[in-house]
Length: 350
Length: 141
Image (cartoon, rainbow over all chains, first blue to last red; front, side, top):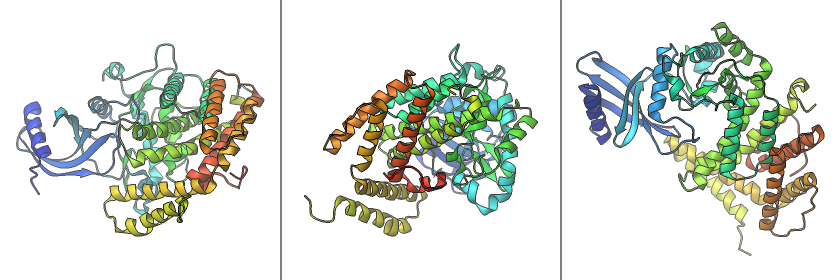
């Protein structure tokens, strides 16, 4: 064990002493790759006495300047969502501490669970093949637990954004995408056409709003050879339609090249839906998930423009963000092909 | 006119350097990832330079047909781009206001959108097109 003496490690130990009364030693602190909106570090925390006595393998998340979408949660609110989900029995890292001003930036500490999160690896690594066979079922069941989270007991109803009064979740999403598109300011007729189609083919709204994870897909879950270890990345949590989460993991982008396995490149959408219903989720109409798959392709198309804008505006010069702007056409094409293939029964214009 | 190598040849040389020489020597995963993106971005630019103004003129004709305007008498790439942006904006407004909701108009715009996306992907990501389009489709771009 190496005892770190970096400014960050020292500040962390001080903050835990000040805010939690913990006499704790920080060791093995090192930064991990990835994270578009936050820095990720791993560390070991050794607590000398009290309820937390012992060694804890933890992850430290630190807020960075950028957000993919303006309506993403800040890190401290994300932490409160994780606390609510964890207490509702969702497999997610146990929240440890929120530190509002660690070296001038919000930070949180959560349990470090084992597992791979990088989508490409989850979909392709040979040692995860047994996990892949279980993921559609496990993620269906975990999603039912997320959507069962009590919004009032956990106070999420007052914390999280919800569609405006009189607006359905689909209408709220469409309006948000139109605003994002207008802010970017480039004309994208294909995206406009998709948004128009979505306005005219909306399925019935949900009977009640639920806690929506908002980015529920392969790539935001930790996977070991046994399967799902935990759901991570809650920054897009909001109150909405269960179908939002049921369809986001289906889009081609999140199949990581394994195109024929519609659920995240790892399984069948039917198995995912069936496990969700078997675990107590509302049974769904297949074509309503199809609708949200189109919505989500448009969402990610607009997302690539938002990302490119972060670079183009000069706010965060970054080659990766810049390059995403040229990927918009992929999602445009996918959404248009899905609209072409949508059954005539759901098309009011026919 | 500049001396050889042309812009396209220079960009191709830089892309080749990144993928054949630099990448094998980079161990840090984040740097590798960004080097791959850099190589990919240069490959996009090379394809765009090779295609010239043809995709612009093609899309201008398509969107002009949709809006009933004939505007393809411009010479410079800048003028073509400005006109195309203007027509795309007009099309976007008509779509959002619901002026193209009837079945035939909607189908025409959908076909334009699909062809335009395919034309852009020929430059931006031809391998993606191979993946999602089962057989060759659409016109040359």
